[in-house]
Amino acid sequence: MTRSTKLGPEERAAAIERLKSKELDILVVGGGIVGTGSALDAVTRGLSVGMLEARDWASGTSSRSSKLVHGGIRYLEQLDFRLVREALTERGLLLKRIAPHLVKPVRFLYPLKKRVFERGYVGAGMLLYDMLSYIGGRPGVPHHRHLSRGQVAKLVPSLNHNALVGGITYYDAQVDDALYVASLARTASAYGAHVASRVRVEGFLKVGERVVGVQAHDLQTGERFEVRAKQVVNATGVWTDDTQRMVGERGTFKVRASKGIHLVVPRDRFQSSMGLLLRTEKSVLFVIPWGRHWLIGTTDTDWHLDKAHPAATAADIDYLLEHVNAVLQVPLTREDVEGVYAGLRPLLAGESEQTSKLSREHLVGHSVPGLVVIAGGKWTTYRVMAKDAIDAAVDALDGLVPPSTTKEIPLLGAEGYRAAWNKRGKIAHAFNLHTVRIEHLLNRYGTLTDELLDLIKEKPELADPLPGADDYIQAEVVYAATHMGALHLEDVLARRTRISIEAWDRGVSAAPVAARLLAGVLGWDTEREEREVSIYLKRVAAERASQTQPDDESADRVRLEAPDIVTN
Image (cartoon, rainbow, N blue to C red; front, side, top):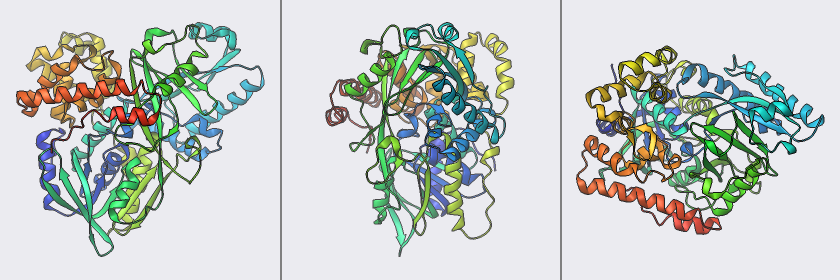
């Protein structure tokens, strides 16, 4: 059976009709990286699969990470070699096979401040990091190198070199986390999974003690319906405990939320040919190259307030600026900060540990018959987490089910990407676009770039950039709705593109243009178009205001003054 590779409004409506009409083998609750990975894992084993997400794909933790695909070099100090090896194996798979168009190598410098011992100690860790990356196959990135003080000065001119004796460089990888999750959901749909965002699970169906499905609420239409499934997989991250309470059972394990914030700073604020890895008294700090920007993060603090909209405080921002300024010749100020975002890590918790010490391992539990819970873990190892969750669900199904095949399955757009990249100059010439534009599209959509170019061929004005966000063109807004599952303006500006954190005005000037484009695709009237813009502008204003507050409670209260997108 041929399935559409589009994930638009028609596909969503068809998926919901199927969810209402048949019992599934597997229903996944949660559309973050682990939920979408679980849906792809299950459907590619030949199972009938559904997936529901209460908000947008990746709207929680999975769009607010450090955007790194990495082994976690700091876990070597904690002697967690298994986790590091597993993550490095996954890094290689993502770089080379699963998503070479989305996952890219990124180089970091570890500045050395002490002679002899520090170079030996850190160098040994980097060597082990490289060796562990080879265990799972070819790593896909160069190995580490030692640099003298003079070499560091040439490569990173803006560092305060009086405080350094040299450095060590190494490689990891990076990804647009939200775009990846949307691509993963779309790939699962293309293989036959029935997936729908903006559908909230409000309860579980039970026969005796057994979970046999969920009560669902379509927030777009207001309709309530039941979805029946032989096994339900709870992949709700920091909401795991809340979801467990709906079953009426005490959770198998407890998940604690740790807040991490990141700053977005223009690339020209300091000169460096690579990112930085800095030690702090609590953890590590990354300065990550991100197109025309730097990402600086992250913090690590307990969070007990609203999970949907974690808020950064003035103290969080000052903490990051203080630590990065300790190594820069010219310090950064609040005026240099283009964007700020806050996310929550779902950590497996004991009762009293500091969040920075809690496990990044994941656990799978079968708390009640018919319900599998997956929790913990880290973005990089999502595929292994998904495999383990579906393995647990499959154990309770009748009949033989094939093992996971996701090691071999590239995301849509990956096949043929390198050949398309080699032809980028010719493609640019054929469409009268700058080569940099084609490179941007290829690194976001891979070989599916053809579909965006078809939109431009039909309407040449769609090649124009969005106001205040020159990196993105209007065709990407249209494509987000027709092919990538975007249903609201916020979905496009915050997740299908990263305008909400990359633009100086955080998308305020792009919002009316993007809303007009979405209205043409999604059938909005003028009132709806204006409402979407209004809600987005209030979100931006609330985020800016929350970032001037001194503490979490104040920031949370101010952030929640902005209305949520709920049409029912």
